[in-house]
Length: 264
Image 1 (spheres, rainbow, N blue to C red):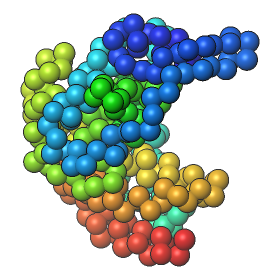
Image 2 (image 1 turned 90 degrees about the vertical axis):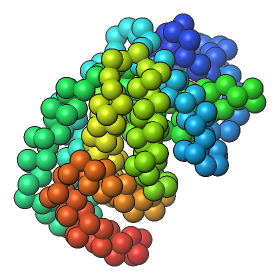
Image 3 (image 1 turned 120 degrees about the vertical axis):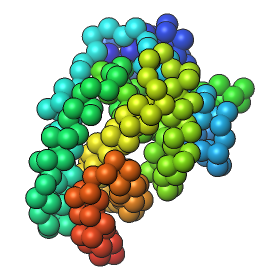
């Protein structure tokens, strides 16, 4: 599937590492060496309008690619992913119950994700998975889990970073850029709202996933990123007027997380 997906993306003019050799019996591949210059190394990335625009153009191309046999992420899957936050981060790691209105939040999130534009969804379209060649060309990596899903999840992946504060002013500006270059008939405000809701789902899911890696497999190396991911989740929650979620994250999750992480 990886090789087929790679060929399909390349045929749709999405730059991915070239497959130089493939053995269908052992499934071994030899791929083009694209170096190690991912966009995570780009200084002041979000102030670099030209580079952000190139990354968004790459995303739009991936969204519109003709891919065969692609799976869909239905609402039940999106919800179950989000519940990793309540079950693993809150209940197992922090030993606290999720706030009473959490089911109401999930009920509000579902139509926001289901009713926005859907397309090919990388599910981890972040700076670490986009490399820049010496000629400035951007190359997409780690696309083997690509599925069909809400566009806001990948937009949040590239526009709401896990390592620096989310600047809503810059986020709105970049959403306007995507609205102008994308193939979707969406306003900048619709793109912004889709990105915020996609970012909420993505961040809650990832906080649960990273905690699961620590608890189940003793892999603590990404736990240090949780406070920044949480801070950006609070920013998005507040922007969407999710008052109960915002209060829960600020008043209970944040101090408990700092306390627990200090003992790791």
